[in-house]
Structures are given as structure tokens and as C-alpha cells.
Length: 376
Ligand SMILES: [Zn+2]
Image 1: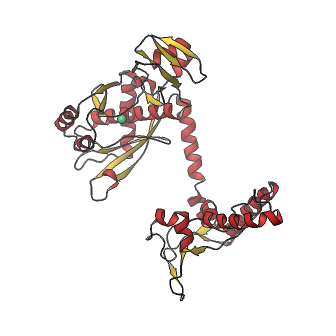
Image 2: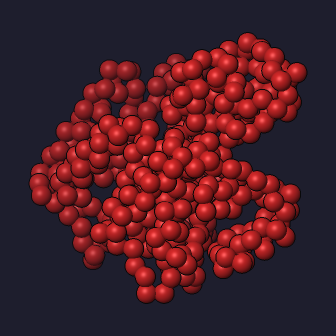
Image 3: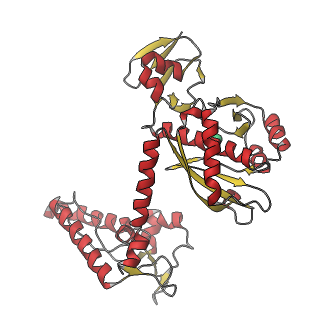
């Protein structure tokens, strides 16, 4: 028997080799239905993987980040399986879960293009594979076997990845006719996925390197309920209508000029009004909570950022020094305003003993890159 400790510190005994899914079933039917993955001693595992030792266990559901992650990662595999069936000879790069959904980078082959018009067909195939309820099976493989397996399939991107892995740590996941080099974890079978949508495609260089081949990145999202997908798609449409790039142009709030530099907004009168209103609102709230305002210069002595660590982090090529006629004097455009604020705090701490300045609520409010970054 092994001891399983739950997040509420309760302990239960189970047979050695029990799985996360069986543990969930022993607690409640509902939990077993909602379970997507299981955390074992802080590591996320498949629900079907046997637990051999005393462990801290937490059943992960949709509401848990890692549960959702396993769900979307499994969905990426599902999409890949559908693609493999629809586009013989397609090669696969990587296919992770992301914040909202998942993507897979694929190389459909010379002259083959996956267009938006093809998405419904891919979705249909995914739904067929869901209906087939294919088990998703984990397998540990040796490096040699993995290399052999993926070389035979001409999966040169996967072969490149395997070459960088350490022997003894390699696993594959298989469902139906599709096998992926993968660390997992995954949901137990394809029927866990209910509602699917392929959202968009984009070009993506293999390993982010523009000298390497350009692959097709297909983005998708899935949900355990059709209603959740419908709601998400409405939200996406609404967000599109409110996209600041669209609204900003239509309402003449700001504009951009290549002469000034792309990404640097030029606030027009209406936009400036709006921005000032937001700043007033911000100031009012800050005053309500007893914050005090300070202002600091946009540049600072190079030594300030050397001391703060920003200089080493941002690199000397990000911020060209502004030299003064004074020998050896160099200023930099500040990467952040915190070093300035630390300096105010330091100076005030000396004075505080005499003047009892209220330092606790010193606010970072200045016309700085930080403010600009959420205002503009
Ligand atoms: Zn995977």
C-alpha cells in the first residue's frame, strides 16, 4: 500500500500502482468526470499513469492551469492527428498549449498551403477522432529508438529535437495512427475534447530562426462544452470590435508616423483629452489611498543603471549613452523609473528621522515609460 496525501492534508491508503483517475473515482464520480490530469509531488502527470510511491496528489480540473494545459496540449495532438490524415507527408515541428488554446507548427510540404477555407474540414476530422474515443498512450523510449522511429517517418524537425534530448528522459504519446515526441501530460483519450475551433494560421520560422524553413502555425482552441466555445467566439468578435488599433483610428485618438517611428503613438487632441481624463482618474484614486506623487527625469547617470543592474540586463546596445561636454559624463534614457524612486527613498530615509515623512505610500507616478506603457 502507498500513502496518498491530498491538498487538505488528509491521507488515504491505496494499492501501489493506483492511477490519478482511480483516486478521483474513489473520492467522487463528479471529480472523476471533471479530472483532466493529476499533480504528483508537484509534477503534472497523466491520469492513467500508475503512482508507485507515497505521494502528494492533487486532481487537476479545467479550473486548474495545468489541467487546462494538458487539455489544450492534447487538443494540439488531436489537430496534428487530423492533419496527418488529411495531408499525407506533412511534417511536424512543435505543438504546445498556450494561454488561450494551442498551436502546432507544421510543414505541409512543397507547394501545399493550408488555407482558412480548409479549417472546417480539419475540424470535422478532429470531431471524428473525438467520436472514435482513441486512447492517448504514453511510452518511454530510448534515444536510439526515438531517432529510428522519427527518421523512418522523415520527421526531420522531430529528429533535430530528439538529438538534443538526454537518453532516458524521452517519451512518446500515441493515439490512433499518430505518435508524437512529447513530454505530456495528456488527457486519457480523445473524447475528453468536445468543442473544437481552428482560429487562424500564420507563418513561423522553425525555432524562431529566419534562416530556417518557414512553417505554418495553426492556432486552435477547444472546450469541454460547446456553449463555452460559443461564448469564447463571441468574446473574440467583441474584442475585435474594441481593438484599440481599430477604435483609435476611427475615433481619431492617435496616429502613427514612420518618420517618428512605428509603435510610437502621436496623440491627437481627442486622444489627449481621453488620456488626461484617465490620468486624472488615476490620480484621484491614488490620492484616495494616500499615495503621494513624485516626478523624476527621463534620463539618468549611467552609474545609476549600472548599480541597479538594468545596464547589465538591457545591454549597452539598447541604450546609447548621451554624452555631455563634461569628460566621462554619460547619461542614459532610463529603462525604468524604479532606480530613480529608490534614490528618492534612500534620500528620504535619511530625512525621515528628522521630518517624519510618510514614505510608505510613495507612488510610482511620473510621465514615464512605465505609465506610457499602459496609457499608450
Ligand atoms: Zn505533445
